Length: 327
Length: 101
Image (cartoon, rainbow over all chains, first blue to last red):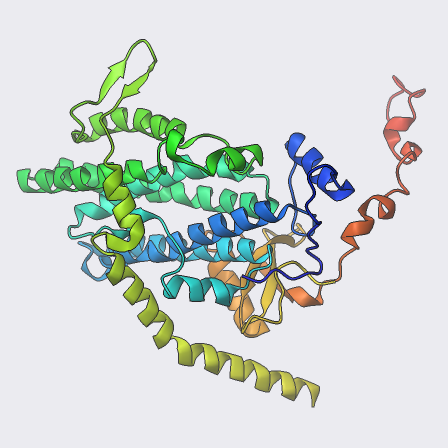
C-alpha cells in the first residue's frame, strides 16, 4: 500500500509532544465529530480504516457469489427478479465502500489485486456453499440480519466517507433481510419436505452467522483501539448478544428451531445464554480452509481475467474520444 | 487540489456524482465512482445511485477537476464571518413581539 505524501501528511510520532494537528484530531474524536479525507489523521487510524473498509468491500463483492448461484434456478420469475436486484445491490455496496477506501489514499486497482492474489480478507461467511433454495432465505434472514446488526452502528463511524457509505447500505439491506425471511416463511408454510429444507438450511447458517461478529471480546486485540477512535461503537459480544435477542422471536414466527440446545433466557441478566461457538472452525475458514474459499477466489479471478478486454477497450475508447475532443 | 481518491495510479479515473432528487431541488453530492469516460460515468451513476428512484437528473464531474480550499488553512480561511453575527436576523432582538418582522 502506498500513501501519498501530499495532501495526506503524516506527522512524526513522538511520545512527549502532541502536534497541533494531532491535537485537533484528538479533539474531533473526543467531541464525537467526524474526520474527513483531507484532515490529518494518525497512521494507525488510516491503516485500520483501509483494512476494515476494503475487507468490507471485498465481502460485498464475494458475497454476490452464493446468491448469484441461484439466479438461473430461482423458482419463479418474481423470485429471479428479486434475487437479481439483491445481487446488484451487493455489487453497489462493494463499489460505495471501495470509493470510501480510495479517499484514504489506496487505489482501487491495488485493492482488487490484493483480493484476487488471496492477500486480502473478507467475511468468513461467504466461504460456505449454498446448495438449496432455502439457503437464499437463510442468507437474507441470518447473514444479512447479522450484517445489519453490525452495520447500523457503523453509520456513526468517525470517518465521514465510511459512515455515509454505511447509511446508504443500511437503507438497502433491510429489503434483503425481509425477503430472506419471506422465503423461509413460505417454505415453513409448505410441504413437510419444504419445512425440512428450511430447517436444514437454518441449521447450517446459524453458527457461521454468529461468527460474523468476530472473535469474543477477550480475543479481539484491535477492538479497544477501534472503539477509542469511534470507528467501532459496540463490542463483538454485545452485538452478537443483541442479534440473538432479535432472532429468537423471529424464529418463533417462522416456526424454525435455532440449533443451539443451550439457548435459553437468563432472567437475571436479561439476555439469552448461548452455547459455545466453535472458534476453531472460524479460524480455519479465515485461514483459507473453509468449504468454498478456493472456489470463491477462483471465480473472482476468472471474472477479473474475463473482464480484462472490456476494461482495456473502454479505456482505449475514452483515450480516443479525448484526443478527438482536443483536435 | 482535487477531490480525495483521485489518483494517476488508477486505470479508470474517479468521478464525483451529484443527483437531483426531484424537480425544484438542486443536485446534491451522493458519492463517487469509477468509469473510463463521462458517458459511462453517467450510466454507472444511474445503476449505482438511482436504483430506487432517487433521482431525475445526474451530474458527473472528474474528481481531479474539483478545486478545494486548502485544508491546512481551514481556520484562517473561514475566520472572517466569525464575530459578525450581525449578519443574522437573530442578532436584532429589540423588535421582538412586533409582528411581521
